[in-house]
Length: 115
Image 1 (tube, one colour):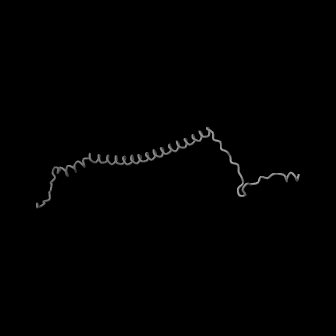
Image 2 (cartoon, rainbow, N blue to C red; image 1 turned 60 degrees about the horizontal axis):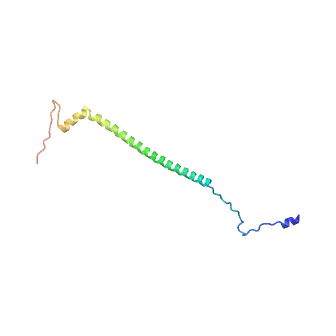
Image 3 (spheres, helix red, strand yellow; image 1 turned 180 degrees about the vertical axis):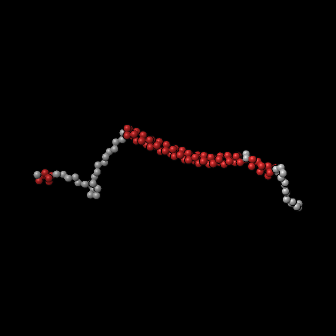
């Protein structure tokens, strides 16, 4: 038995620093290449769709802000139309622009000296 142990061959490393390693050979087949390309295509498609969704959400937010601003303006314009169609405004406009007065009302004009 001692002879068997003494005759056993122990591999001697080529370099004292690095032990030798066997490299695993990677086999590329058309199936793996095709599957890899398909996965890359799916990822790129997903990214493209997500970017489109992000852009559309930004556009929706912008349009919602515009809708809110236009709604406020519409309310303001409706109030202005209501005021402009009131008898109060009509009387004021007739007095200021046309110089009209009511019956039994006296109009006093300040005397301004001519230069």
